[in-house]
Image (cartoon, rainbow, N blue to C red; front, side):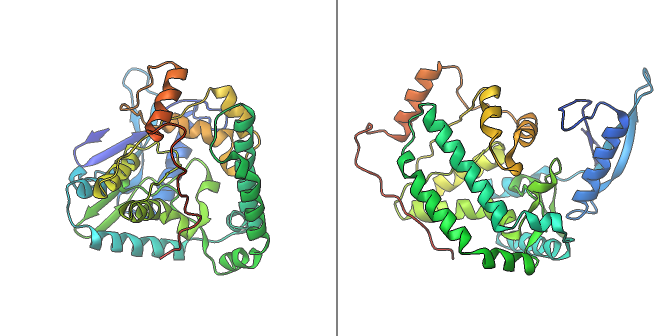
Length: 334
């Protein structure tokens, strides 16, 4: 909520099993942690932890006290309006590099950058694809999973020195974890980066490149689209700002954007996630689902069978027998 030049964030008294905010003490601790983590990026925005007391109950409500940011200076809004943002992006990059350089290192952080940790994530993804195929879902290229897995394992087993070097060079950091244009405010005295990922430390323990991965994803997609190629961007896309950024990338390259919103029942999700690596387990999925903003433009009123037909028609406008699509095996980094 906003009051004058201040913004206040209240933690809801909920119990998500892995996050229990049912007590005042737990909510206060969560507020204190949010302030501490985000002060790494915007110390003059996260002012501290306060309390809101109801005259009826007298029960205190811990809250995060923040300096209110001008909505007109959101990076996402400036981009939508066509404002020049090159200098801002460079300033954000410098700030991010500085925070990464200052971030404390530890064994727990380093563990998330090892080849073994990466391999476990890949293995969980392969298991998920195979489980979907076993469920009878029509997946293009599912027969190639074995070859892809062989190449991944070969690459990772032969690149242990690379990942060890990244760790040895201090490249694996406790970073932001959820860097979005909607959470960056471009002020006259420099950018303010807000709302780092707080509910699972492991999701912030990444190679420093990961904090810039979303922007790089859209940049590469734009490059391929402008060259006349089709692109599949496979991600959660749970935040409206992410979807808007993808839409603008399509508009800049005169390409059609087809957004397919996929959901599964909770028990199916739990069964699939039970085989996944620790950074994508059921607790993480539950937290993401709890915090996920609504997707009002998604049409979810059709029966399942009709929705599948519509989705396939959108991505295969010329039918299942259309000419094979060229698949670029790899795009060299800049």
